[in-house]
Amino acid sequence: MSTKAFLTRLTLAALLTASAASAYADDVRPLDLALSGDTNRNYAVTVSTRTPRWWIPKVGTDLNFQVAAPPIPSVRPGLPPSEPTGAVWSSLTLPGSGAGLAWDSAKLEFRVDPSARSSTINVSTTRTWAIGARVSASFTDTYSLVRNETSAEADWGAINAFRVDYKPSGTAFVAENLRSIDDDDWHTNLRAEQALGFGLSVSASVSNVMSEDISRTVLASFSRTW
Image 1 (cartoon, rainbow, N blue to C red):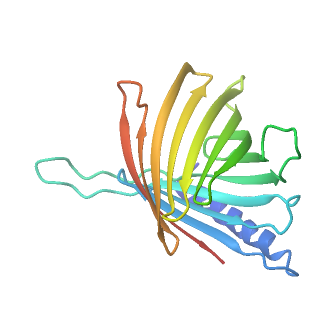
Image 2: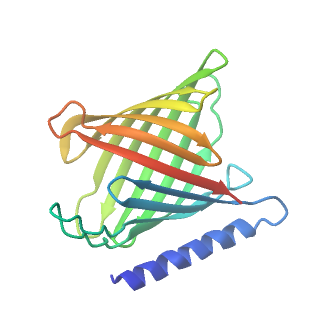
């Protein structure tokens, strides 16, 4: 698929997202816009709706791309931009569970990635605990099933995430364990997040901390709601 055709499809998906948001004109139905970029020139844009009732699915579209980098004399030549990728998705967050269940909320998500010719179903459950008035902790289990048109078998993945939030400063610490069908080993990632206000936030992460292939990333994000 050409870049022009791909961007056209993503633009149409964004317009459909906006139409879905305005379909409920009797209530306030804003759009969410999120922008993020890291030190490796990777950027992501997400546009999604906010639905008034839990049984109305939230819909949105993602666009990911890498920008060009100018040459650095005596270090490296200029780097070209990458082909953009993206997906359209729909998610449904179920209300809090009653007593006796192991989670507070559950989320179902269906994603379609036209550039990768794949579709994904994600199921996640979250349990949250209040530790005093200023600190909260949560544990999230996420399981994914990926179907690719070029493969006869579906892939699966799992993420276990433990998160601690310190509310007065907007600081969070996250530890994740990841596993996939292609790798029987669990991989651990650590991340620190800091809200700066006005929709801005920064995060620093270390991936594969228990292996020799350690990577570090600094990410800046901006989000706004209409």
